[in-house]
Image 1 (cartoon, rainbow, N blue to C red):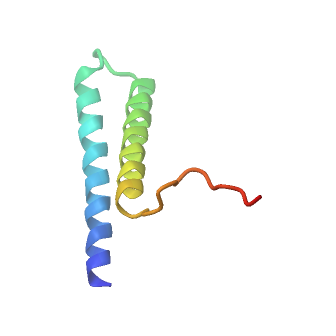
Image 2: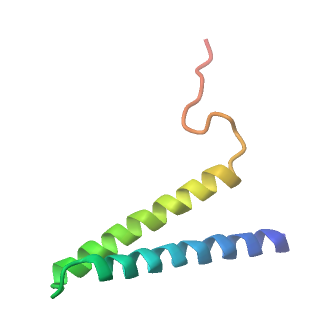
Length: 75
């Protein structure tokens, strides 16, 4: 149980790191001066990328079923 808690913290820290790095990169790339809507776009894109990374990590590590997204119907 202790290992699982550390694993969850590691995944959470990785997700926060992805969010912060994407937000920092977009903050540098977006043309200046930044408006309120630019910050909204930066936050939305960073959130999307972080959640996509989290989803990918969870699917590849925790889910062991070979067919994750569909189930065969019984005939």
